[in-house]
Image 1 (cartoon, rainbow, N blue to C red):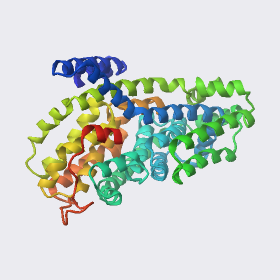
Image 2 (image 1 turned 45 degrees about the vertical axis):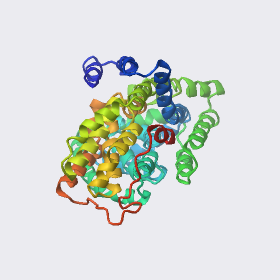
Image 3 (image 1 turned 60 degrees about the vertical axis):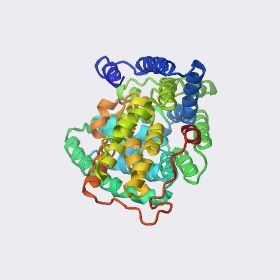
Image 4 (image 1 turned 180 degrees about the vertical axis):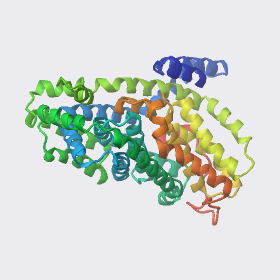
Length: 461
C-alpha cells in the first residue's frame, strides 16, 4: 500500500486520495473475509472519521483566517514590516524562532503555520529565498512549540496514554528537542549566509511598494494576530479564537481596506483575489478561503476511513506484534517505538493514531525492561508527532501543502528539527544517555497503566 502511494504521489505526481480509497476498499474486504460484518466495517470507518472531526474544524477555520487576513491587509502588513525589519541573512533563523515562540504559547503547530507561517512564506519568497527552506524553518519552529507546550493536544495525548506526568514528559523531551533546535538554527544560519548574496534588493523594494499601493498598511493591523495568539495563550479554546480571528479579518477588509461585504464574504468562501501586475505580489495574495481547504478536508476524511479499519480490525496490531519480536535491548525497543510510530503515520495517515497504537502495544515491554514511562512518551512524540510532516498523504503533510503551498519533497530536507529529533532519540537509546529507569513505580516514574481498550482510547482522543 505504501509503495503504491509513493508511486502515485512521487512518480505520477497525483494526489493521495485515490490510492487511499483503494486501500480502504482492500482493507474492508480483508476485514470482511476475516469475519467482520459490513456493518462493523462501516462503523470502524465512522469511528475513524469522528477522530478527525476536531482537525477538520481547525482546517476549515484556518482557510477562513487566511482568506480574511489576506483581504483585510493583515498578511500584507506582516510581510511589509517583515521585509523592513528582517535581513535575508538571518531570516530563516528568525522565522524558526518566531514560530517556536508562538506555537509554544498557543500549543498548535497548525494554527502557527496557518497564521505566522503564511506571512513568513510571503516574506521569504519576496526575499528570493527557496520556498522549501522557508517552509522547513516554519515547520521546525511550529513543531518545536507544539511538542513542548502544555497546551498541545499531542503532548497531552502522549503523556496521558502512557500515564506520565505532563511536565515530566515535557522535561524529558527537552533532551532531544533542544539539541535538535540548536543544530537546526546553526544550519539555518549557514543557509542564510549563503543565500543572502543572491538576493535582489531592488525586487524587495518593488514588492513592498506594490503592496503599499494595493493595501492600506498599518501597524494597528498587527493587533489582529496578537489578539488571536493572546487568546489561545490564555487558554481560550482554539475554535472560538480562530473564529474571532476570521471575524476581525472580515471587518478589517470592509472597514480598513474599504471593500464591500460581498468581496469580504467572497474572500472567506473562495479566497482573496488580486491583480496588481506584479507576479510575486499576485502569487502571495491570491488564495485562502474555505474552498482552498476542501482538498485537505477530503484527504483527512479518506485517510481516517482507512486508518479506522486498520485500527479497529486489528490489522495494525498484527503489524506491531511483528515489530515486538525484534526487541532485544533498550536501544532496539526505543528505535522500534519510533519506527512503529512512523509506520503508523505512513499507513494510517494520521498522527493521533501514530501515538495511540504504539503507546498501547509497547507499554508492557517498557515496564518489563524497567524503563520509566516518560521514555515511551518521548519516543511517541519523536517518532509520531514529528515524522507526520514527512508523509505526503498524512493529514499533517496535506495540511502543510494546502496552507504553505509547498510539498513534502520540497520542504522535507529543511524541516531539520523534525529530522533530527528521532535520530537524537535513537542515539540516546543505544548509548543509554538520558534514559530513565523505574525508581518507584509511581506515576511519571514508569508506573504505566495496563493498555486501555482500543475503543475507549480512540474515543478519548
